[in-house]
Structure formats: structure tokens, C-alpha cells
Length: 349
Image (tube, rainbow, N blue to C red):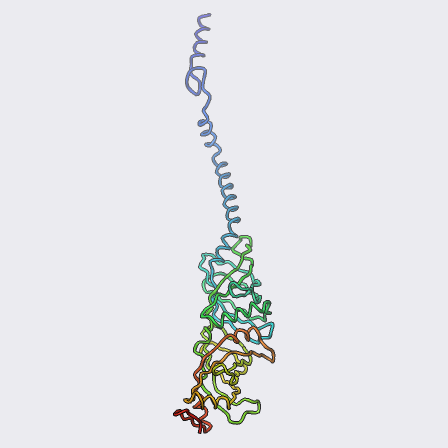
């Protein structure tokens, strides 16, 4: 009996367990437990992974979107195709502008309307305009038609001086607005653009193309008339009112000329002028020095008057603009019967 029990006990202790090995048995390893767990619960882990990944991606996208939006605005450019400053007063003017916005992003967000300052790059803003709401894209048109107030007279004067005397200028548009794209939250973006505008280049090509003299002055005191060619290579149209020039020969004042109700159009145009000339002084100059009848006229801007009000933001730049013209006064004098001889000291007869 004892031998039988010993045999049974020996079998139990030396047999193999369900995990293999000797009768003492082995606990499952970590990898065995992990494999068993994943085999049963893999779908739970997949759902958790997808959810966490989605949350992280969305957070990154939403956090990065304002930066992406600002980069898109910064990469865009603006092209001004037409600009008009009409009905001016000493502190305001009617501002009309057409422009094209160029953006080559794959997305086309919407920009809300916003207030923007205009200035010569590097100078103080001279006015505020409301830029219309627009979508982003290539060659998207925008139209502005507003009465604007001149907020900085010196800044506007500097802008006009640079525009008058330069081949091109850098104009700045600056503001901020809200940008919208699909279901993303609105992003607040800065709009700061510098665009190149063709300038008047000191009115290169300015000339008196037609000139006539009256012996007796007209009722308004004028005694000369003709036409003045003013080239305008820009996209800008200015209403300047009555634009008056002072005329000199050898730094001696001989008279003035006025273009009345001048609207300076784009392109090369001649405008009618009237004026006053000190005829006795001119005749003396021709008799004593310029016997061929051609006078070296220095013409300098004097005043810009619209509806009886001086526009100093135009006057000051024009007063710095000097034009030299070889004017054939002899032909005008011949029209009224004064024929010039150019030999031996010259004279009139």
C-alpha cells in the first residue's frame, strides 16, 4: 500500500504542467501575456490610437493655422492698375482705386473688409481707407471709391513730392483683418504690403507746344496763351485745379502761366494755358541778348488752387519742380507783326 502511494506521489511531482516543463509548472512570460492580451483586445487599442492621433493632429493644425494663414497673406502681392484723386480740398479728396491681388496658394480664404493706412514706404501714413472684403486667388480685382481725410499733411506732401520727382516709388498699405478658410476658426492676420508705383519722373518731356502773344491784355489781365504738354507715365489721375507756374529768364521773373481746372490724365496730353508776360522786359531781352527770338525759360510751379482753396500738399512739391524750355517767342511776335532780325546786335522792327 505504501509503495502504491509513493508511486502516485512520484508521478504527480515529476509530471508536466499545462505550460510544459517539470511538475512544478512555469508562469507565462510578459510577451506571452501581451500576445494573449492583444489577441483579445486589439480593437480597443486601435480605437485609442486613432483617437489620440486625431486629437494630436487637430491640435497641431488648429494651433498652426493662424501661422499658415499669415504666411499666405505675406506671400500675396498687390498691383495697382488705376488710381484717381479727385475733388480735392485742403484736408480731403475723392479716392478711387482699382487693383489686383495676386496669391498662388492652393487654398482661397476670405478676408474681411478692414481699415488700412496708406503711406510712402518709410514715411508717416497720410490717410485711412476701407479695403473691401475679398477672396484670395490670382488676379482678384478690388475697387475702392471713398472720400478720405488727409490725416497727416506732411506725410501726404512727402508722398506727392516723391511721386512727382521719382521714376518710381514704394507705396505701403498697412492694416489687419480676419481670415476665414473652411471650418477653421477665424485667424487674425496683418496685411502689410509694399507695392511699386511708376512716378512722374519730374515731368520729363514737359514743354510749351503752342504759344501766342496778345499786344493788348485781355479783360482778366492775361496777354499770352497756348498749350503745355505734361507727360504722365503713371496709372494716376490727379485733379489739381488751377495750376500756376512762374516763368524766369536768367533768374529774372518775366510772368506766369496757368492751366485752369487741370485734371492730369494718364498718358501724354497737352492742356490749354493762359498767362501774363512782361512784354517790355521780354522785348528788351530779345533786342539785347537773345536776338534769335528763342528764350531759355525756367518755369517753376507756384500754386494749385481748387474751388478757391490752396492745396498745399500739391503746391509744395510743384514749387520744387523746375523745367527748362527753349521757347520760340520770335514766332509768336511775328504773328502780331513784330519781325526779329538777328544780326549785328539784333533788334525789333
